[in-house]
Image (cartoon, rainbow, N blue to C red; front, top):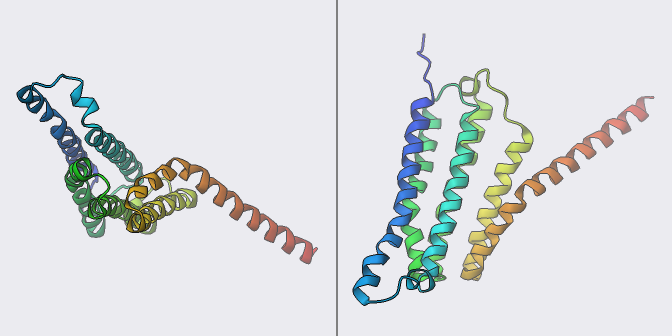
Length: 216
């Protein structure tokens, strides 16, 4: 009989990688202090003269935090891991570990096409990994076991989020600087998901009512 493989160690390891990535994000900002002292500039220059680096740090911190929270919600439905789950999870961790690099690039080069596409492409890859994780958990009984099933609405929310990241990449190909603004749609993602879910439910209710009328 195959030994039950608990996902706890995988979750703990993932948490450690996320924590390290968050720490690496702030290092470029801490390096500004010795530079300001050497140049004889006031402390306020650390903020007023480095807003692109601060913006990139805050953006990536928020994105990684969102990814981490979603990752934990996924693993609430996991009772045992399998090979595909581990592989996709490590691919997701790769995107998290890499993210401090494009974050520093957008702080230095801001809206250059390569920099924006590299950054948004990394976010898209991370979102795709999350969506793949969710489908593995939802479809494999050996993985989700007796856990609460993943709802269709939650699955749609993952697909919508990935679509927003993909749209940001497409927009960045045309107008690099506007790619960041597309990410603001993530704030509307819950509303979009609920609206689509409500529309589908209304359609299903309408079909049921039509069938009842036809058979009545």
